[in-house]
Amino acid sequence: MQHGGSICPEGNRVQAYDAGRTESRRGPLLMLCAVAALLFAILLVYSRTIAFAWDEGFHLLAAQLILAGKRPYLDFCYPQAPLYAYWNALWMGLFGDTWRVAHAVSAVVTAGAILLAAEFLVARFPVAGWRLACAVAAALAAGLNATVVGYGAIGQAYGLCLFLLVAAFRVSVAAVERASPLWSAAAGFFAGAAVGSSLLTAAAAPVLLVWIPLHNRAGNRGAKLAAYLAGAAVPFLPLLWLFARSPHAVFFNLVLYQLRYRRVNWEDATAHDLAVLTSWLVSSQPLLLALLAALGLRFIARMSGWDRAKRAEFYLCAWLALAIGAELCATHPTFERYFILVTPFLAILAAVGFHAAASRLYHPVRPMVPLAALALLLTVPLAKSVYQETAALSWRDLEAVARKIEEVTPPGGILWGDEHFHFLTRRPPPEGVEFSYAQVIDMPAAQAAPLHIVNLDELVRQATAGAFATVATCEAEPEIQQMGLAQLYLHQAKIKSCTVFWDRAPARQ
Image (tube, rainbow, N blue to C red; front, side, top):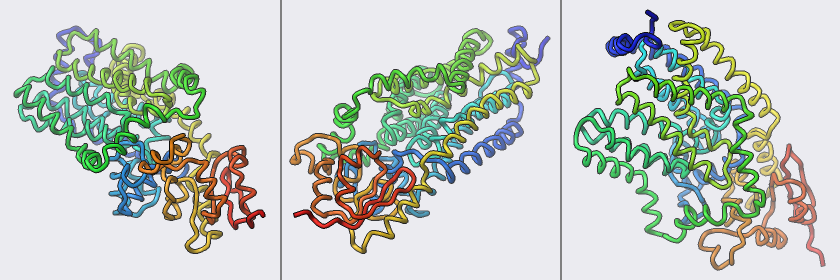
């Protein structure tokens, strides 16, 4: 008889599962924590060195504005769910309003999401001898993923959403086994908080709403359903408070902007989406993850020795990945980085696929060599991705621009800059500069003013009239020429791909 429960007869497979239920999880959990700590160290080092994404600017500026007493939607344009901005404001209030604080917090919650996803296999994988190996495989599949490293440790909501989604999944699995509806309330809270942090996670909440009562094994289904809905409503209380004060502003930022204005001046958005949705076919990490996850699903479907409840937990990973993935595919335009949100659930399924392949192709009870091979297959593309990022724009480059701004801007002078420069210099942005993407919206001034939107042409007119002492932008040269900034200012300095203009030119007669 083979050992480990993976290819033994049906009765022995079940026996291996039952025996595994009683053995201690302390040792495997400590080893898994050591792996998670290593992955966290990678995330933390990356977060404090080259981690950067352009859209961080308006997220971090929004948090800084909240710290200054302003309210999203009501006092500045912010077409995003609000919780992440408040989350950042909380940590910045405690440790300082710097990008390093936001990055460090994101690295912590991303590492927490990886550990939660991997520990699920230590706790729930039915094949006792492969629990730790599968957990480590899941941690590696998620923690060495180039997209997770690249976007899980920056000043955007991805890291927080990863943690909230995996927490909602883990609590939902526990909720069906317990009579108390409080577990369902907690699952609803985490799912609602994920949606409140990013609308890209909206599809997860209804999946869990259906799954919990459908697979309930203890307590009252109706009570759990009500508890889930009540828990999910709690994270939306700040949004409801904002909505009560300005329904039109909140509706515009969260609905109208997404439906009508998000694709403004993006003529090739459809071609872009098609390129994104097929990119995984030529990228080694996503392709490996998808193939192993598919193999894992096939393995689960064929393992009749697994009880229905256990099988349903792994199928829930597939349903969450499918629902969130479908939403991300429908988002227009979509981006490869959005699919970071399905990575933990695919990683769990991929770990099962890893077990299915390694136990048959290599050895039924010796996973270390296959684990090393998997780590190598994941590390090489990650290293390549990180190396390529070293030549890209970074926060350190933007800090050099901010120092130049401070050097050339007179006391009391008004800066018109990209959101990053207002954040770094702590200079309040003029009206309409808080969210630069809104500047391309063609909207009558009477409608735009209550939404705190100022058209780019109007900002250029204000610059021409002498409203701004300094202008700092990372726009490309054609856009700079179109705005005529070189003719408006006597001096300019180029730092990496950004330009600072200062010292107003005399008005032409």
